[in-house]
Amino acid sequence: MGYLLGIDAGSTNYKAIACDAAGQFLASARRPANTKYHENGWAETSPEQIWEGVAACIADVAAQLPGETCDGIAVASTGEDVLLDGDAQSVHPAIRWFDTRTEAIASAWEPFGREYVYQITGINPNPVASITKMQWIKRYVPEAWARARLWIPIAGFLSLKLTGQARAPWTNACRTMAFDLRQRDWSEEILAEAGIDRSMLAEPIRPGAQIGSLTTAAAAATGLKEGTPVFAGGVDYACGTFATGIIRPGQMLDSTGTSEQLLAILDAPESSTACMEKNFTSVAYVVNDAYYIMGMIVASGGIFEWFKNTFVCESFDQLVEEASREPIGARGCMMLPYFSGRHTMGSDPAARGAFLGLTRGTTRGAFVRAILEGLCYEMYSIVEAMQELPGQRVESIYTIGGAAKSAFWMQMKADVTGIPVRSKNVPEAAALGAAMLAGLGAGIYTSPENAVARVQFDEHRYAPDAERHGQYMELYETLNRLIYPALREFNAAVTHAQGTNEVK
Image 1 (cartoon, helix red, strand yellow):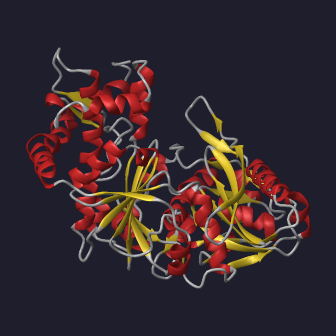
Image 2 (cartoon, helix red, strand yellow; image 1 turned 90 degrees about the vertical axis):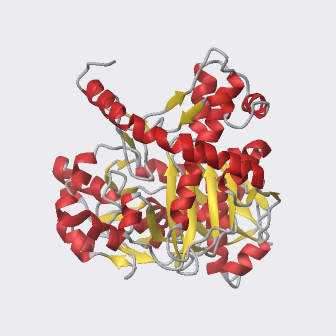
Image 3 (cartoon, helix red, strand yellow; image 1 turned 30 degrees about the vertical axis):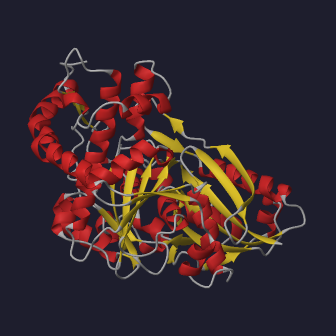
């Protein structure tokens, strides 16, 4: 019996899963990621240690399936890139995506034209974009840059270690801010503006296309057979979306963990000024040569963790149970979820979280209900902004992540948005999506539609209640949407005061 192997090289853990054509797991393994955090807030990782961790995971899986044949491998990874010398050794640690040391470099793209960059790449100039990390290394670590010969995404780097072939999956290439969405190739204009030669970049490749075959050295490191085919994967959340079964317009993914991503499929990239101003990402998807648009709530489940840890509360389930006993509106208590700044609906790093409408009668359950409602209102604003795009209507929202286990929260999402919500229990979605891409490349699946039809997981459907939706909308229009504008000037002043050490 053959199996498919999916890799998820994440920021917290490296994972490998083996599954059959129906998506049923046969074996799995994980290793902790090796992120190094510096006192100044920088975060880096060693490309060689990423490879060691991933190779160990693959070897663990292979050992659990002795005598079985791997029909194909693909890699999902975070959006970081690595810089290699002529011997494919790193010349500098990979700068993690959430490391914002390049904020000034990102801002320096303004004269080139923020709108022009967005039209080409589908993202605003920002410190997450890996081209800014490359510019930083070039400017501040010139000796490393002088030795560099290859700039490649982490997913491509791992495939390079497996096959000896350097390729950049489209979805990972998009995270560089140097990829032309319509040409599906590197943008000569943006590379010229950054002072980076095209010859340094790995060739782009469609997700699911074959990169090469396992080399002798990689076979020895992983325990797999030499010649095992390796296919292009993609960025982790796009692979996870595919594993959830989302492949056509009208379907939306809501992935809620520490942060919350809302992703909808498009037939063509959306590069309007309105999307740019709201800071939506609109880039290439992993199947059907489609695109997606994505918004994000930076602090979502993380607010629950903060609340629970700070106030030494009960478990998540107990807190939600207390919230369920409170009425809609949480007795006047409202929460603004910008505990880590505002990303979508207009980027605002100075934005802050807030609780309002408190009295001495405000209960712990009311606080928690206010957190849930505040997150759902933010979700609603993002969904509505997406639906304002020409021809874009959201028919259903598929939820994955920790929040999907809470029936109360899922019903609230449906009631606030007025859209049916489906919670799906998709284990290790990013790694599974990578395995499904390998299955497409290996011919196990005849199409993305065939893959989705064969890989099914239990789901629970939540229909919106019209009366509750009306109550939520009245609160949203009369109170919630007014909070951010009312506090914006105050938050900017607090941020300035902290920067000048007036407020500790």
